[in-house]
Length: 341
Image (cartoon, rainbow, N blue to C red; front, side):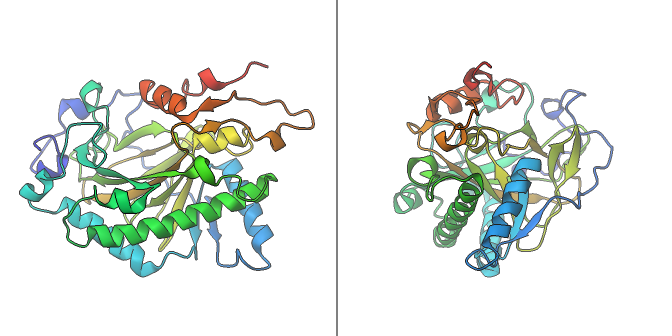
């Protein structure tokens, strides 16, 4: 428990183990919020504007690998309730936190700090997190979730159902935009989901550390509930840009598996989380992934007409194992799966 940053609020200086190498740390340069990251209105996806929405999503996925969505079907009340419950988790008494705290990386539901690789890290991330599965069997997963706060299971269960519907709807739009058959991303390609609730406490020196370093998500697609405190940044065209919170919006993040299946027609975006010295920040990432034994490869419809496949076929478990071994290093993590020209 003493490793949790949330229990060390009296720190006046940044511990050495959290100081990133100079070339990685964010420094004191202020990163402006980017006004050009697309905010896409999904309100008419069942109407006459569906084709236009599909093209907006495809363009954003190609140019940024990131976009935000509004009028997405998840109620404002449920989003607010869920964020309130997430904050309540990290504000529980020590004895309640102890019930879900674990240093075992194989425990399916656990509260811990930094990352799953804590014991082998050269530098720790300025982050605590609660992580647990949500699908394929939500009812079974819920039995592993925290029993406190008392309404956690009900609220987050409802939230998980609605966000999975949203993810499936966005994947269907991307499928249409790519010219793939309806339901292409259904079944085992989007069978699993994992929720990671991230807590970034106020930091003594945000210029020296990161909540999460630069990475691209290893999964298919991520639905992020960002909260109202800034901290998410995307790497585009050689520079960092800030992703400002939009009221009642979700941030949608393209993962490596979607990039591979699309044969690079959409891309996963590198991103990071920075800290601040005043406000705790809570965000919740809902990761949608293939099953471990699912075969991932470029869609055959996209490699016709002379377009060669850029990646070989593989089981998702192989990719994920390599991703963890390489610590998500975007410079090398795709290399074992690329096909030579």
